[in-house]
Image (cartoon, rainbow, N blue to C red):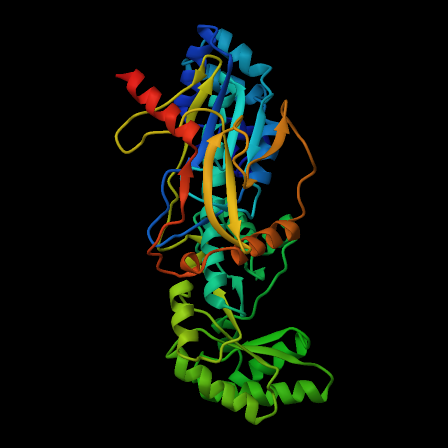
Length: 455
């Protein structure tokens, strides 16, 4: 790479059109040469849930719609593609004027989703619909993965809060931003990621590092300095040397803060036997009349570790969750796919072993019983009289949003409400029973007809 590139931003907004796999462009070029650009419909969905997952929380839609509305190839992008020598002049001309003109149906962000259900349904001229595949999969798949992980953490926390501590471990700068947003939608109360706070308006939360304690001559000097500088927002890290002694020093500083009109918010423990240590720390704080000082723990937290700690009765008020949240450590990818389901000639089906698809333009109907999700039915979009609540909503027509972006707080509340409707069996961390997702009789008949027709 030449030095001229070193001062350029990581990715220009105009470059997003090139964030696509090569075969999307070569296929689109071939379509263009053969005048094949009739409307086509693609479904973006997860074929199956990852191990021990009972549900997904849909996420990433707002960014996906931003991308679709702004899709274009500028002169620099076209020059690069021309220089590859791979593409026809007719195709490059098509790209020069390309804008997304299609319609989009989607499961709203924060809503529950299950296997084979379209998270996003794109209907657009074939070239447009093909080119957007890679970005949509990247955008929707990753953020749905992290929001779903965060929702599991939220369920494990019960009535406690947790903060996204993940940016230093996330797989790249863009991933750290998207993980913070998705984690907040899934249930995190805040993030340590300052840029995510600025970008999305997320609440910020943070404490201090062990290095802060170590650069002072003594631990209590470090605590006093931090409390003096942040008298209403101090959370002191007490495990640099000895946790119990750190708790006593933190309690002393907390009482000093009270006397001067401030308030110690909490103490954080990042290592050790957290069940035993949190009990001892709670006793020390309570013994000094500091019952309102929170005990926060961190250090390789995930939903399983949090559940174990709370089951053991550890008196923990909040959690910092980092690596395992931002990377979805136990399940680091979500197998979303983007498949052709219809074109101007009618429904399309793929019959590959283990990778078969459901043909036609579809809707998903959700049936509740007593405020709890009971089952979903995947049906063809023009079926009537099935009952239930339609889950997919129209969000874009002719390449333009149908409504302004939803406020982030509203999306987060939708996710929390969605979790409240989960059956008990799906709220568990180890899921034994899958949620019922059925095909309507008409869709099932179409699948059978197309399967027999193919042979």
